[in-house]
Structures are given as C-alpha cells and as structure tokens.
Length: 398
Image (tube, rainbow, N blue to C red; front, top):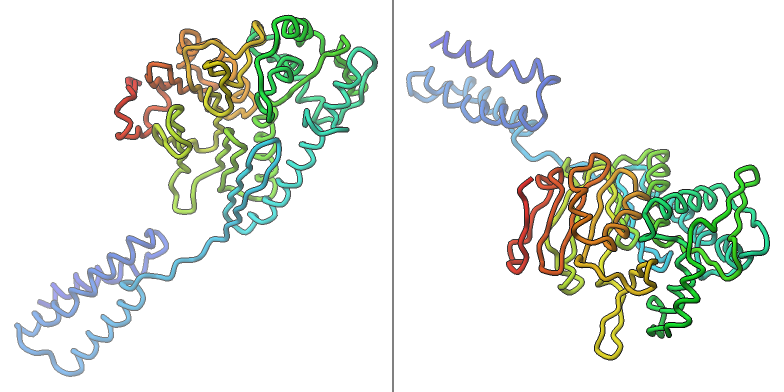
C-alpha cells in the first residue's frame, strides 16, 4: 500500500512541479481529479477504517488547498473592447476592436475615414473628387497621395475590366439618381449623351505633380466602386500600427476581419439572402484576416411602370446590368480588389464568374436568379449554410 501511495504522490507532484508546461485548463482538471481521489486513497490505506485525526485533517487540508487553487472556476480576465457605429461614405460604419489598443485604433480609424470622405466624396462640395470633376476638360487638379493612388488604381482596373467596370460612370449614374430621393429612367437621348463621356482612358495622371485631369468637359469620376475596399486596406494598416490584433470593421457591404475573437474562434459573418429581408442570411462565413465585398441587385432599386431597376449600372449600355446573378461576393486579402471584382463579376454574370472559382488571390460566392449558391472550394470548410433556406441549392462540392 505504501507503494500505491508513493505512486499517487508522484502523480500529485507532476502537475505542480512542471505546471509551466501544462495548459492551465488541463492543469486545473488534473488537480481537481487527483484531489477528489486523494481522500479515497488515504481511506483505503487504513484498510477501509476511519483515518486518524491528524491524517484526516492533512487530507482535508490538501483537498481544500487544491480545491481553491484548481477546482474552482478562475475569474475571467476582462478584455477591453471598443465598439461603435458612425456614418460616412453614404453608409453605416461599424467598428469593434479588442484589447488595450482598441480605443486608440477606433479613434484613429474614425479620423481617417472622415478625412478620406472629405477627399473622395462625389457629393461633398470642395472634395478633391468634386474639384477634379468640376475642372474636367480644363486643367489639372493637385491631389493628395491617397486620392492619387486610389484614382490611379481605379483607372487600371477600369481598363482591365473590358468595359464592365468604369469609374467615369458618374454622368450616367447621376441621370438615374437611384441613390437619391427621386430616381427615374432617363430619356434615351440624354442617356446616350452621358454614355459618350464614359471612358477611363480619359483620366489623365501626372505622376510628377500628383495631379489629374479628366480629358473632356462633362466627364466625372465616382470612386464608390473601389473606395471602401481600398480604405479597408488602409484601416488594416492603422489597426496593426496601433497594436490591435483582434477585431473587425464593416463599411456597408465591405467587411474586414483582423485576427480571431478573444476566445480563439474566428469572426463569423452572415451572407445576406438577396431575396429575404435585411435580417435573413443564406449562411455564415469565417474570413480570418481577409476582406469581403458584396454586390447585389437588392440594396438600392426603384420600380417604374412595373419594371424594377437596381443601382448597378453597366457602363456598356447605361442601364442597370442585365445579369443572371442576384448577388456576388468576393473574399480576398486585398480589399480594393475584392470591391472591384464583386461589381465586375456581378455585371459579367454567372458564366464568367464561375470560371474564377479556383483563384489563389481571391474566392467567390455567386448566387444566381434560380437560387443556386456557388462557392470557391477554399470557402467550403468556412461556410455554414442556413438549413432553413430550403429554396436555395448550395453547391458545396469543393
């Protein structure tokens, strides 16, 4: 029996002597188990007879000490969190950051968003984009480094898209007014006149002076199709510089996740049902360290003479895109690329989008008008379908 007790003492000493190499939860559970059985072992050492008072007291003391140190739940350390909502770029912006640096990051990011809106807004009088549009066909306009680089990248993507994405679409979208209070179907003559002003080749850039000019009077730039995504890339940099390694930000339909939640789990976001109300989701998706951008026909639209017109204008026709997709989501480490591609693939339609399911630089989720949901293979393990959405067919062969 002394050998039995000796072995038991060794088991008791292992987690205490080498506690630095054990996970705290494993250590606590192990000590709890051993403590509960220590009294039983001492009891059996006495041949099943009551223990002597001193030994009984020693056993109870051992049990009490271990119970306090291991078996009781340890108080959880509160992790600071800073969360809030603001409004900019014509959309609701939500920030949530964890850790001591969360407050600093929140304020720095809010400041950055305010500064960038004053530069990039199409509708704010005196913004850099407003001054660029007002000076179209007349003169070069000096731009800040941020605006110049965003405009430069937007021009490159517009030309690369083959005409389905173009940041000089502003004269056409202004005619439709879908994002305003009085949307209408424009007349054919005025629509064709506006279309003649569309063409990213007319964005003239001067690298030496960081200035730009639009080639023809009446041209206008709208960076709404890429600005929020590219801002997410800047926000990631700000958060990391401030020391934040856990949190997320949502700029309307554009989302950035940094790290994991404090409990070690991934941040999970809902994929909206394009034909449900605002609170219905097709499923949930984890995007650790990535950005997500979605383009769909459900956010902004109006009806006239029984016809539904959505806000995603095809630069080739001047009309809302006639596509067999109702929603297209792009997930990528590059927020600007995700923003640009979500619009481009949405307009191109299902046939083109499905050709790009296996790309390394980005992943896709495409929802067509027949309610089929297609996912890039890389997203399948990260996506959980909503089982209640039986009207949809989820293609999860990846």
